[in-house]
Image 1 (cartoon, rainbow, N blue to C red):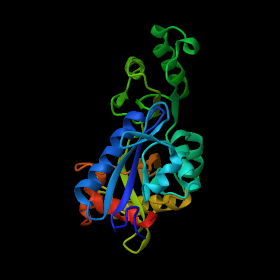
Image 2: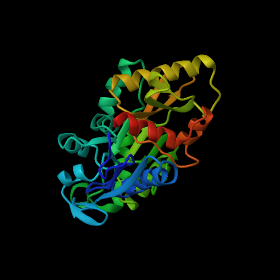
Image 3: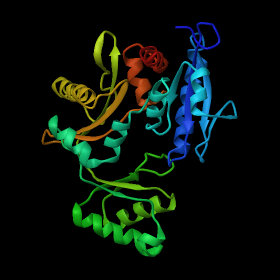
Amino acid sequence: MLSKGGNNIKKVGVLRGGAGKNYASSLQKGGEIITQIFENLSHKYKPIDVLIDREGTWHLSGVPIKPADLSNKVDIVWNTTDPNISITLDNLSISNVGNSPFVVALQNSSELLKEHAEKLGMQIPRSVVLPLYQKDFDGPRELYAVKKAKEIFEKFSSPWIVKSFTEDTSMGIHLAQTFPELVESIEDGVRHEKSILVEEFIAGKVASVHSVSSFRDQDIYIFPLGNAFGNFSNKEKERLSSLAKDLHKNIGVKHYLKSNFVLSPRDKVYLLGIGGILDPKENSHFSQVCESVGVKAHHIIDHILEKAL
């Protein structure tokens, strides 16, 4: 397949930004993909920055465009914005890579994630999502954190993990062991103007398992566990790898999945969460597990682009 422009260099439109709440994180993630392609894969691909501004207008090289115009400008799109945009790209017959709408639905719905986890013999921690504070709906600002902390305390006891619901790194991750600490953690989320996720803390061995479709002659390739909080036996490693593979297959992942687990002292496996966008930064956990099997993060980006093309 020849790229638009008549040579063998494929043009990769990296779609970032968007009108939703993840504008800033999408800019960052898209920028990381652009950097990886520019620095390591420029012999095969030319990255093209495609920005969706906060009002929903698409821009290519700073010039507003219609989504349909993109089909004549790029060979493939790497989408770091709203996953539902992938549906628009599919309708325009534009090959694309990105987080699937279903994976995002699982990330956003503890009930849906619980349903799939239990099918595969896992549990998920109990949790509560606190939407972005709005005075008209939530009442006085000074009473909000205490009120919400009481609601959570009645549902499940300490300790609690409190973090941004969108995994925005501007808000820290808190481990609250007392009621006052829970109140202060919720206050931090309100100060950062974030929706907040409060989860029950499950003690045990924690691991993130990365999986990629159709890599190294395997339908679903599971990377080694890599760094983890606790030493896993070979049997435990095999168990978590098998669960990650089952999850990857069960939810129909096209390209990449990160599965976060904790193995409790009672030998129960909890699924803490999933993610569908890889982190290619040099010191990321994903880069570390790639190097443990003799590849770099950009090799996986190349593999995913080839598969999507």
